[in-house]
Image 1 (cartoon, rainbow, N blue to C red):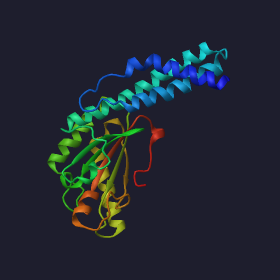
Image 2: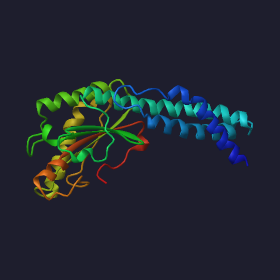
Image 3: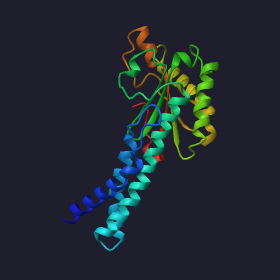
Image 4: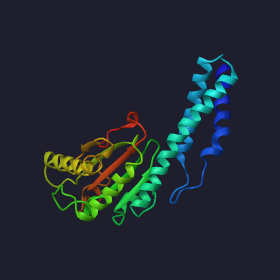
Length: 235
């Protein structure tokens, strides 16, 4: 019975705050899924803390739920805001279609996920063959991301490089690592990002044609609200 009351009070807290965070889309995407998820998770956690540290009553749980929802919703809103800001700066929209990466015309894809925002840069706009030196147009785009990240000092950044299967694995792993490090150098104003070279692990499509190999060559930038959400990009 107490657990049911706790869940109910956290839900009440979330509903009381929904109006604060259910804002229209900034430009490209107004779904604000992370805002809702963050507020809901924060409300439940806050209600539990309020109940356990207070007088074990509904009032303490509601107060805790309100505070938790506010904190969780604020984090979610920041990530939603970043996704839209990045898309605007890169001249694209937020695209959560899982098939978007299969279109070779999508040279940059900004997508929103449950715990992170991802920016995928297609390799052909980034580097010459077998090179880790950014081309001038790509350098401009990456610098735009870096400038925006300066507005979000709490954001944790991860960068992964991916190649196709041409050549040996070790060579591709080193090349993908160098490419990730090159991008990281331009995004280092928030502290050096986490980088990893994935070689041809986690291919988008089988490496069985020139077209498919081009789809697999890419650099991905991940924006996390906190370090605890970091995941291995190669798996």
